[in-house]
Amino acid sequence: MAFDRLEAMRAFCRIVELGSFTRAADALGLAKTTVSGQVVALETQLGVKLLHRTTRRVSATTDGSAYYERARAVLDDLDELETTVSQNRGLARGRVRVEMPTPVGRFLVIPALPDFVARYPQIRLDVGCSERVVDLVQEGVDCAIRGGPVHDPDLVCKPIGRMRFTVCASASYMADKPPLSHPRDLAALRYLAFVYPASGRQKVNVLQRGDEHFIIEQEPVMRFNSGGAYVAAAEAGLGFVTVPTAEAERPLAEGRLVELLPEWQLESMPMSLVYPYSRHLSARVRAFVDWAAEQMGNHPLWRP
Image 1 (cartoon, rainbow, N blue to C red):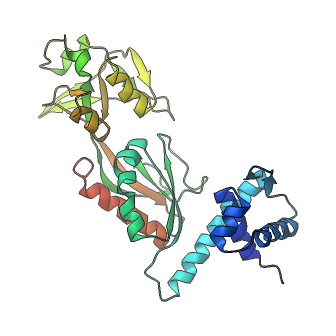
Image 2 (image 1 turned 30 degrees about the horizontal axis):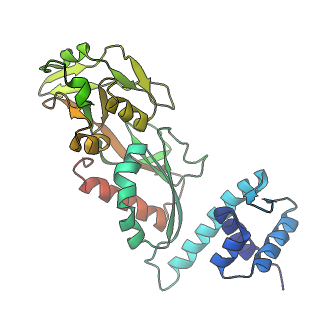
Image 3 (image 1 turned 90 degrees about the vertical axis):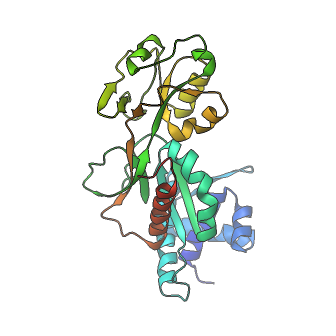
Protein backbone atom coordinates (compact mmCIF):
# COMPACT_ATOMS: atom_id res chain seq x y z
CA MET A 1 0.00 0.00 0.00
CA ALA A 2 1.33 3.42 -0.96
CA PHE A 3 2.27 5.81 1.84
CA ASP A 4 -0.60 8.22 2.57
CA ARG A 5 0.97 11.27 4.20
CA LEU A 6 -2.33 12.91 5.19
CA GLU A 7 -3.58 9.78 6.93
CA ALA A 8 -0.22 9.43 8.68
CA MET A 9 -0.47 13.06 9.80
CA ARG A 10 -3.96 12.39 11.20
CA ALA A 11 -2.71 9.34 13.05
CA PHE A 12 0.27 11.22 14.48
CA CYS A 13 -1.90 14.16 15.63
CA ARG A 14 -4.38 11.87 17.36
CA ILE A 15 -1.56 10.07 19.17
CA VAL A 16 -0.19 13.40 20.46
CA GLU A 17 -3.67 14.56 21.50
CA LEU A 18 -4.64 11.31 23.23
CA GLY A 19 -1.19 10.27 24.49
CA SER A 20 -1.62 6.68 23.37
CA PHE A 21 -1.33 4.56 20.23
CA THR A 22 -4.24 2.41 21.42
CA ARG A 23 -6.60 5.32 22.11
CA ALA A 24 -5.65 6.98 18.82
CA ALA A 25 -6.31 3.75 16.91
CA ASP A 26 -9.72 3.40 18.59
CA ALA A 27 -10.60 7.03 17.78
CA LEU A 28 -9.64 6.55 14.13
CA GLY A 29 -11.27 3.14 13.81
CA LEU A 30 -7.98 1.51 12.80
CA ALA A 31 -5.83 -1.31 14.09
CA LYS A 32 -3.05 -0.27 16.46
CA THR A 33 -0.49 -1.86 14.13
CA THR A 34 -1.77 0.27 11.25
CA VAL A 35 -1.43 3.50 13.25
CA SER A 36 2.03 2.52 14.46
CA GLY A 37 3.12 1.74 10.89
CA GLN A 38 1.81 5.10 9.65
CA VAL A 39 3.87 6.98 12.24
CA VAL A 40 7.01 4.96 11.51
CA ALA A 41 6.57 5.69 7.79
CA LEU A 42 6.06 9.39 8.53
CA GLU A 43 9.21 9.54 10.66
CA THR A 44 11.14 7.78 7.89
CA GLN A 45 9.78 10.20 5.29
CA LEU A 46 10.75 13.23 7.40
CA GLY A 47 14.02 11.82 8.68
CA VAL A 48 13.28 12.83 12.31
CA LYS A 49 11.96 11.17 15.44
CA LEU A 50 8.50 12.54 16.24
CA LEU A 51 7.54 10.57 19.33
CA HIS A 52 9.13 9.38 22.58
CA ARG A 53 7.80 5.87 23.21
CA THR A 54 7.95 4.06 26.55
CA THR A 55 5.94 1.17 27.93
CA ARG A 56 3.83 3.62 29.95
CA ARG A 57 3.36 6.72 27.81
CA VAL A 58 3.86 8.40 24.45
CA SER A 59 4.89 12.04 24.05
CA ALA A 60 6.07 14.30 21.25
CA THR A 61 9.74 15.09 20.81
CA THR A 62 10.81 18.71 20.27
CA ASP A 63 10.62 18.14 16.51
CA GLY A 64 7.34 16.31 17.00
CA SER A 65 5.77 19.21 18.89
CA ALA A 66 6.73 21.66 16.16
CA TYR A 67 5.45 19.30 13.46
CA TYR A 68 2.20 18.71 15.36
CA GLU A 69 1.31 22.43 15.44
CA ARG A 70 1.77 22.82 11.68
CA ALA A 71 0.19 19.48 10.81
CA ARG A 72 -2.84 20.18 12.98
CA ALA A 73 -3.35 23.53 11.25
CA VAL A 74 -3.07 21.88 7.81
CA LEU A 75 -5.60 19.20 8.73
CA ASP A 76 -8.02 21.75 10.18
CA ASP A 77 -7.78 23.85 7.02
CA LEU A 78 -8.36 20.76 4.90
CA ASP A 79 -11.43 19.86 6.97
CA GLU A 80 -12.81 23.33 6.42
CA LEU A 81 -12.06 23.22 2.69
CA GLU A 82 -13.97 19.97 2.38
CA THR A 83 -16.85 21.46 4.37
CA THR A 84 -17.18 24.45 2.04
CA VAL A 85 -17.62 22.24 -1.02
CA SER A 86 -19.75 19.55 0.58
CA GLN A 87 -23.47 19.36 1.22
CA ASN A 88 -22.76 20.22 4.87
CA ARG A 89 -21.22 23.61 4.10
CA GLY A 90 -23.10 25.20 7.03
CA LEU A 91 -21.47 22.87 9.56
CA ALA A 92 -18.25 24.41 10.92
CA ARG A 93 -15.60 22.00 12.09
CA GLY A 94 -11.95 21.81 13.08
CA ARG A 95 -9.84 23.10 15.95
CA VAL A 96 -9.99 26.62 17.39
CA ARG A 97 -7.35 27.89 19.83
CA VAL A 98 -8.66 30.66 22.06
CA GLU A 99 -7.19 32.63 24.98
CA MET A 100 -9.03 34.67 27.59
CA PRO A 101 -8.63 36.14 31.08
CA THR A 102 -9.31 33.60 33.81
CA PRO A 103 -12.48 35.31 35.17
CA VAL A 104 -14.00 35.38 31.68
CA GLY A 105 -13.27 31.70 31.23
CA ARG A 106 -14.40 30.56 34.66
CA PHE A 107 -17.52 32.65 35.08
CA LEU A 108 -18.80 33.25 31.54
CA VAL A 109 -17.40 31.10 28.76
CA ILE A 110 -16.86 27.68 30.37
CA PRO A 111 -20.30 27.50 32.07
CA ALA A 112 -21.89 28.27 28.69
CA LEU A 113 -19.79 25.83 26.63
CA PRO A 114 -22.46 23.08 26.58
CA ASP A 115 -24.46 25.45 24.36
CA PHE A 116 -21.49 25.91 22.03
CA VAL A 117 -20.90 22.15 21.84
CA ALA A 118 -24.57 21.58 21.00
CA ARG A 119 -24.43 24.16 18.20
CA TYR A 120 -21.03 23.16 16.81
CA PRO A 121 -20.35 19.51 17.67
CA GLN A 122 -17.49 19.23 15.16
CA ILE A 123 -15.46 22.17 16.49
CA ARG A 124 -12.67 21.26 18.93
CA LEU A 125 -11.68 24.05 21.31
CA ASP A 126 -8.28 24.56 22.92
CA VAL A 127 -9.11 27.02 25.71
CA GLY A 128 -6.35 28.92 27.50
CA CYS A 129 -7.19 30.93 30.64
CA SER A 130 -4.57 33.24 32.13
CA GLU A 131 -3.83 36.89 32.76
CA ARG A 132 -0.94 37.13 30.28
CA VAL A 133 -1.24 38.78 26.87
CA VAL A 134 -0.39 36.14 24.27
CA ASP A 135 1.15 36.82 20.86
CA LEU A 136 -1.60 35.37 18.68
CA VAL A 137 0.52 34.99 15.54
CA GLN A 138 3.66 33.65 17.19
CA GLU A 139 1.77 31.20 19.41
CA GLY A 140 -0.71 30.05 16.78
CA VAL A 141 -3.78 31.32 18.65
CA ASP A 142 -6.86 31.90 16.49
CA CYS A 143 -8.57 34.53 18.65
CA ALA A 144 -8.58 35.94 22.16
CA ILE A 145 -10.77 37.83 24.57
CA ARG A 146 -8.79 40.80 25.89
CA GLY A 147 -9.38 43.22 28.72
CA GLY A 148 -8.46 46.89 28.47
CA PRO A 149 -7.55 49.02 25.44
CA VAL A 150 -6.15 47.16 22.42
CA HIS A 151 -3.48 49.14 20.55
CA ASP A 152 -1.94 46.42 18.37
CA PRO A 153 -2.39 47.50 14.71
CA ASP A 154 -2.01 43.88 13.56
CA LEU A 155 -5.19 42.80 15.35
CA VAL A 156 -8.85 43.15 14.45
CA CYS A 157 -10.59 44.35 17.63
CA LYS A 158 -14.30 43.80 18.26
CA PRO A 159 -15.65 45.37 21.51
CA ILE A 160 -18.08 42.92 23.13
CA GLY A 161 -18.65 43.93 26.75
CA ARG A 162 -17.20 45.14 30.02
CA MET A 163 -15.68 43.53 33.10
CA ARG A 164 -17.23 45.10 36.19
CA PHE A 165 -15.59 45.16 39.61
CA THR A 166 -16.76 45.18 43.22
CA VAL A 167 -15.12 46.36 46.45
CA CYS A 168 -15.59 43.69 49.11
CA ALA A 169 -14.20 42.08 52.25
CA SER A 170 -15.18 39.23 54.54
CA ALA A 171 -18.03 39.75 56.97
CA SER A 172 -15.78 38.70 59.85
CA TYR A 173 -13.16 41.31 58.93
CA MET A 174 -15.78 44.07 58.78
CA ALA A 175 -17.64 42.97 61.94
CA ASP A 176 -15.81 45.38 64.27
CA LYS A 177 -15.26 48.18 61.74
CA PRO A 178 -17.34 51.39 61.63
CA PRO A 179 -19.66 51.88 58.62
CA LEU A 180 -18.06 53.33 55.50
CA SER A 181 -19.62 56.54 54.15
CA HIS A 182 -16.95 57.57 51.62
CA PRO A 183 -14.03 55.86 49.81
CA ARG A 184 -11.57 57.80 51.91
CA ASP A 185 -12.77 55.66 54.86
CA LEU A 186 -11.06 52.69 53.17
CA ALA A 187 -7.76 54.08 54.48
CA ALA A 188 -8.66 52.60 57.88
CA LEU A 189 -8.81 49.09 56.35
CA ARG A 190 -6.12 46.72 55.12
CA TYR A 191 -5.83 47.00 51.34
CA LEU A 192 -5.05 43.91 49.25
CA ALA A 193 -3.91 44.78 45.72
CA PHE A 194 -3.95 42.79 42.48
CA VAL A 195 -0.87 42.71 40.25
CA TYR A 196 -1.06 41.70 36.59
CA PRO A 197 1.29 38.70 36.32
CA ALA A 198 2.55 39.48 32.81
CA SER A 199 3.62 43.08 33.51
CA GLY A 200 3.94 43.20 37.30
CA ARG A 201 1.79 46.34 37.14
CA GLN A 202 -0.60 46.93 40.03
CA LYS A 203 -4.25 47.40 39.08
CA VAL A 204 -5.43 51.01 39.42
CA ASN A 205 -8.87 51.32 41.05
CA VAL A 206 -11.07 54.33 40.38
CA LEU A 207 -14.39 54.66 42.24
CA GLN A 208 -17.18 56.77 40.75
CA ARG A 209 -20.44 58.22 42.05
CA GLY A 210 -22.09 60.63 39.66
CA ASP A 211 -19.49 63.30 38.88
CA GLU A 212 -17.27 62.29 41.83
CA HIS A 213 -14.12 60.21 41.31
CA PHE A 214 -11.83 58.65 43.91
CA ILE A 215 -8.60 56.75 43.19
CA ILE A 216 -7.57 54.14 45.76
CA GLU A 217 -3.93 55.09 46.30
CA GLN A 218 -3.17 53.66 49.75
CA GLU A 219 -0.24 51.31 50.17
CA PRO A 220 -1.34 47.67 49.99
CA VAL A 221 -0.44 45.33 52.84
CA MET A 222 -0.31 42.40 50.41
CA ARG A 223 -0.34 41.94 46.63
CA PHE A 224 -1.56 38.96 44.60
CA ASN A 225 -1.17 37.97 40.95
CA SER A 226 -3.84 35.24 40.93
CA GLY A 227 -7.55 36.00 40.94
CA GLY A 228 -8.41 32.86 42.90
CA ALA A 229 -5.76 33.59 45.55
CA TYR A 230 -6.91 37.22 45.70
CA VAL A 231 -10.50 36.24 46.52
CA ALA A 232 -9.30 33.59 48.98
CA ALA A 233 -7.28 36.26 50.80
CA ALA A 234 -10.38 38.41 51.18
CA GLU A 235 -12.42 35.44 52.42
CA ALA A 236 -9.68 34.72 54.97
CA GLY A 237 -10.22 38.19 56.46
CA LEU A 238 -6.91 39.69 55.38
CA GLY A 239 -8.42 42.95 54.09
CA PHE A 240 -10.52 44.42 51.30
CA VAL A 241 -10.18 43.68 47.59
CA THR A 242 -11.42 44.97 44.23
CA VAL A 243 -12.45 41.89 42.25
CA PRO A 244 -14.49 41.17 39.11
CA THR A 245 -18.16 41.23 40.08
CA ALA A 246 -18.67 37.87 38.38
CA GLU A 247 -15.95 36.35 40.58
CA ALA A 248 -17.44 37.83 43.76
CA GLU A 249 -21.05 36.93 42.91
CA ARG A 250 -21.18 33.55 44.66
CA PRO A 251 -19.11 34.50 47.77
CA LEU A 252 -21.38 37.56 48.19
CA ALA A 253 -24.56 35.51 47.79
CA GLU A 254 -23.30 32.94 50.31
CA GLY A 255 -22.27 35.60 52.82
CA ARG A 256 -18.54 34.82 52.68
CA LEU A 257 -17.94 38.36 51.40
CA VAL A 258 -19.81 41.64 51.85
CA GLU A 259 -19.88 44.52 49.37
CA LEU A 260 -18.39 47.82 50.52
CA LEU A 261 -19.61 51.22 49.35
CA PRO A 262 -22.30 49.81 47.03
CA GLU A 263 -23.39 53.31 45.98
CA TRP A 264 -19.94 53.82 44.41
CA GLN A 265 -19.00 52.05 41.17
CA LEU A 266 -15.51 50.85 40.31
CA GLU A 267 -14.36 51.79 36.84
CA SER A 268 -15.12 48.87 34.51
CA MET A 269 -12.74 47.34 31.97
CA PRO A 270 -13.66 47.12 28.26
CA MET A 271 -13.57 43.59 26.84
CA SER A 272 -12.80 42.83 23.19
CA LEU A 273 -12.48 39.87 20.87
CA VAL A 274 -9.28 40.09 18.84
CA TYR A 275 -7.81 38.09 15.97
CA PRO A 276 -4.97 38.72 13.49
CA TYR A 277 -5.60 40.87 10.42
CA SER A 278 -3.27 38.61 8.47
CA ARG A 279 -5.18 35.42 9.18
CA HIS A 280 -8.24 34.32 7.19
CA LEU A 281 -11.16 34.14 9.61
CA SER A 282 -12.35 30.60 9.04
CA ALA A 283 -15.91 29.43 9.60
CA ARG A 284 -14.92 27.67 12.81
CA VAL A 285 -13.22 30.76 14.27
CA ARG A 286 -16.10 32.99 13.12
CA ALA A 287 -18.48 30.60 14.90
CA PHE A 288 -16.63 31.00 18.21
CA VAL A 289 -16.18 34.76 17.82
CA ASP A 290 -19.89 35.31 17.18
CA TRP A 291 -20.94 32.90 19.93
CA ALA A 292 -18.65 34.48 22.57
CA ALA A 293 -19.86 37.98 21.65
CA GLU A 294 -23.45 36.76 22.00
CA GLN A 295 -22.77 35.23 25.43
CA MET A 296 -21.19 38.40 26.77
CA GLY A 297 -23.80 40.66 25.20
CA ASN A 298 -26.65 38.70 26.80
CA HIS A 299 -25.13 38.43 30.30
CA PRO A 300 -26.08 41.17 32.80
CA LEU A 301 -22.64 41.12 34.46
CA TRP A 302 -20.69 41.42 31.20
CA ARG A 303 -22.74 43.13 28.51
CA PRO A 304 -21.76 46.61 27.24
